[in-house]
Each structure stands twice: as structure tokens, then as C-alpha cells.
Image 1: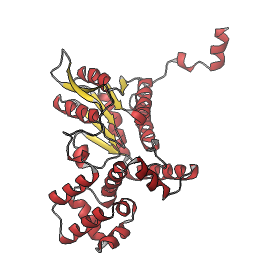
Image 2 (image 1 turned 180 degrees about the vertical axis):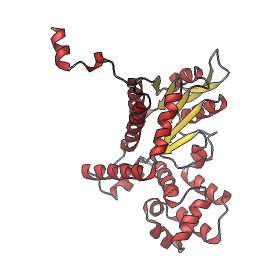
Image 3 (image 1 turned 135 degrees about the horizontal axis):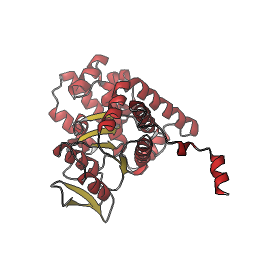
Image 4 (image 1 turned 45 degrees about the vertical axis):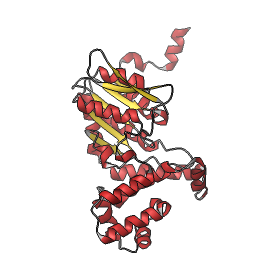
Length: 313
């Protein structure tokens, strides 16, 4: 776990952490409640939520049978807790989620993240691991995106980028690929969008932003401390922010001005990037339609490859 030092830019009063002698932290003592270890998170839900007697019976069942709760159907959960399906939905709503699907999405992500390497291996041993299973999982994730994310929400992200003076896209580790694609394609169609992955680079990039600019944080699977600090710094400086994540936690989502939830569940040991990449692609497609003159590709970039080769000779 890396050590964080708060850097202050000479032209800015804000401070941001950077990792020194290690990597960006995923778990910190000062992290808010949505970053608590899995069992502590479930206990805190039980302690703070206002639930009926049946709702508490359901939550007790979730604590006692985390795997079944993470992957089971609504009916299976109801049978497990000896309640009806309506109680399952109402209990999830009482915990601050739109419904059982949203709560289970968060529950499953936290449960899987809590497992050790051997635990993950045992978990995956119970399910098919193959190329076919991986493709099927990705198709299911894409179907979820198509059903659950309104096109207007995607257009809003594109509009926010379009009206920003500059946009910094913060995306790390595997999800850096998503951030690179979003920033690269947005730049192609004429917008000042930059991807950063390193916490130190992030601190420098954030220090130059103003109220006219935008921060887009893409963070799934494990929530990095630098993502949290960047969103908080943006809020403090009145810089607009957008969060794209697999977490349905209201506490996490509240850090950003706007958020989009995408699934990251894959097959094997790796998160799936398909949904996030698809969403990034949809955003830049919308972005390209907002100002056709701005996004016109210069004729020099349309030169066929064959002509380029002939000029080279």
C-alpha cells in the first residue's frame, strides 16, 4: 500500500494525494463507509437502516449466506429469508437503493472484492470458465447497459464534455484503457480531453482546472483513494465531475455531480471492460454530433494509406 503526500500547487490552494514508494491505495483508514470491508459494511447497514422485522430477517439472511445473496434470484433470496418478494425489494429501498437489482449489484461487488485469491479461485470453480462463458457474460453486461442506462444520460455526459473548457479523465489500472479511448476519441473530434492514470500526474492536472472544466472519473472493481480525493477536490473547487463506476453505493455516487453505473463482472479473475468501453464509445459518438463543424476531420487525415506510401517513396 502506497504512502500519500498532499501536494499543493503554487497557484492553487487545493491539495491532492500522490503515491510515494508504492501504488495508489485501495483501502485507507480514513475512507468513508462505502469503502469498509465487506462484513463491516453489512453490519453498518444493519445498524443504521430503518427496517421492518421482516427486513431485518432478510438482512440477517444476507449476512449468513453471502454467496447465495450475491448471485441468487429475488425469489431465492425471499425463500432464504422466509419473506415474500415484495419484502426483498422494500428492504433494498430502505437501505437507500432503487430496488433489489441495484442493491445486489453493490452486494456482489463487495462480496467478490472481499475474497482472497484462493477464495476467488473457489468461487470461480463453481462456475463455468471458458471463452464462451466470458463472451456470454459480456453480452449480459451489455444487455444490462442497454436496458438500464437512458440515452439522455449518455447525451448529458457528452454535453458536459462539450461545454467544458478542459476535461481530465481519471482512469487507472485495467480501466486506464477505457479512459485512454474516451480521451483519445474526444480529442479527435475537437475537444480538449486528457487522460491521466498516475496520482502525481492527476494532482498536477487537477491543479490547473477551473470552474469551466470537468473531471470524469472511471473507477470500477476497486475504488482508489486518489479517485475519492479527486472528486472531493473538484467539489471543493466547484469543478463539475462525472463518475462512471460499477458501484451502486449512494455514498460514492454522491461525491460526483453526475454518475453512471456500469457492470464490471467478468469470468475468471478479471473484471470486464466491455460495458465501460461501450459507454465511452457511445459518449464520443454523441459528442461528435453536437458541433459538426468542430468535429470535421481535416482533409489531410483522410488521405488514403496508399497515397501516404507513395509519398514516402
